[in-house]
Amino acid sequence: MATATPPTNLIFPWSDAYSVRIPQIDAQHKGLIRLINDLHSAMAAGKGKEASGTILDELIRYTESHFKYEEGMLRQRQYSNLAAHQTEHKKLTGQVVELRERFRSARLTMSVEVMQFLKNWLANHILVHDQAYARELNAAATR
Figure (cartoon, rainbow, N blue to C red):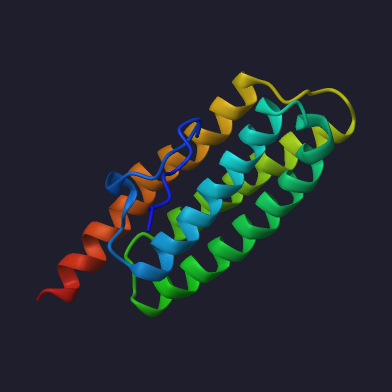
């Protein structure tokens, strides 16, 4: 039986460096990464214009749902920097909503630069902000 090999043209492959060691959050982050990769794949196939609006809408819905879940978990686990993390979530959501509005009004076309923005937007959030809470919560769990 052959094993499936992952596509090699992903703009944003999952890396263990993104793991916060909380399975539900990692699964949601993988979902967000999948949407960014889907958008990139649609662009590479010449279907970026048709798919972009739908995928951006889904990215916003998924992001809002993920942030709500994550904030609830952080509140429950009494994360010390929750207020700043919520502020960061509002900023990130606003950036993607603005991107979608610019796309809808034809002031923006999907391009490599936009894809890099989305990739960097999520990677930076996970590697900086989410890893900060992961260190605190995972240290508390081992005490």
